Length: 116
Image 1 (cartoon, rainbow, N blue to C red):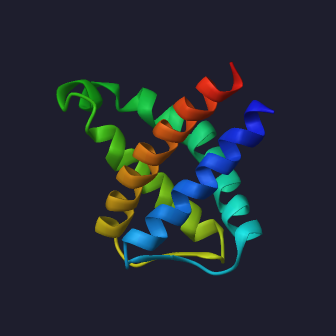
Image 2: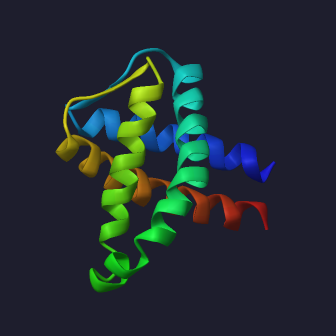
């Protein structure tokens, strides 16, 4: 159940990012948003964790801000592997990663309080 709620919050975060940023688009409906959120979670969980571990000094020196750059890179990698997600440039990916991080954090906290 928790995994499904995290997937839905990721899909809603992608919807918010595509609504607010003109440089990122998802072609399709709700199933596509769920698929892209699943793929991004998979890539970010496997490769993102490894990259964050390898770049830990840069993350510490930037007080954690470099992790948004890594998330943007993982988002661009997701766009490369998915034909439904299109990102124009790195700055759109960086802005989208900020929005996705904020929305998923907020929704995960909201879902956590609702399921208690």
